[in-house]
Image (cartoon, rainbow, N blue to C red; front, side, top):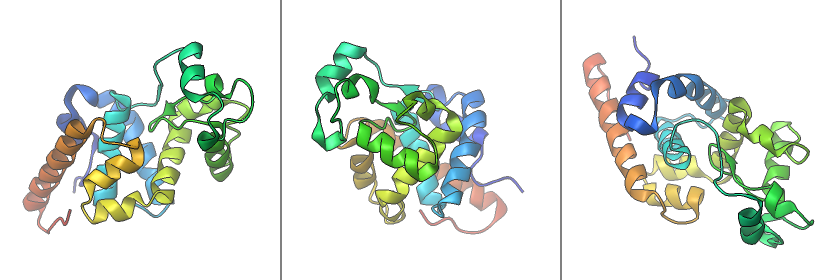
Length: 193
């Protein structure tokens, strides 16, 4: 029997934002990280797929766009991000599947997943490490509970801080839900999303 969510289905739904080779390389890592954290409901997986598609634009870890001057302007000295040392703004810009920012987040997530992201923030671009960060972020921000309750707007706000990318995110959630329901009807059973 085919897995309910597979790279081919994901890529078909995401189109140019989910090249099949990227989905094949990254989805198993993300799915495994979600399962490791015990947050692997179908709704949580849909939230992860839609989030990664919107946040990265290509279904693989990315660096935030901009250069040192841009990052310094937007992040330097931001206590809310834990940027308390000179140069933190330019060093702890967004990376990964969800674009974590700030010394505080790099420290916390790195410690929790057992990787020194303070010494080498670019490790967040490693797909396996980025997947671990994504899963931990989802768990600590209660995204599975929001996804399981179909509170998709709150899911987007927790990740993005607002609703940037909402139209695409919402469309992906809807299309993935439809694809899963169609897949379930061909093999029997009922998908609750």
